[in-house]
Length: 158
Image 1 (tube, helix red, strand yellow):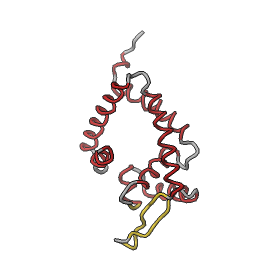
Image 2: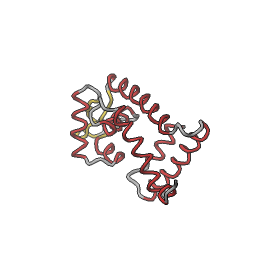
Image 3: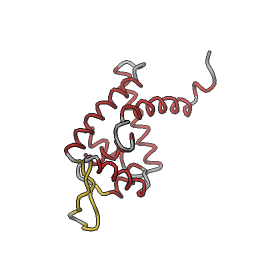
């Protein structure tokens, strides 16, 4: 039996998001902040290193909350605050060696989560879905930008 909701974009996005979020929370449960902690750690692994304000803007996290999250990641030796050579008042957030290994292991776990969530699709469908979703996400980002994350993604995927 079908319902009118089955064709509703909001319903579909919600169902897929909840399935992904639940599995991702489980896969990242040992990381301070769970999925948000993973995002911050991933930002800290990136080059060039960025300060807390830039990371907060990119991830859409309040700076105050981000401070506590970075503190928790720092306590587990996953990230470190380093003076910014361009501005001594600013601190760059960088991943430690332990943090890099943790991010890599957690990224692998998330790949399994993604494969599980997309398991109803054939590999070529999954690839096409990802490409289309990236296109829609980047378009939405341009309409309501936090920053130009889509250009950053293109450079990483490049």
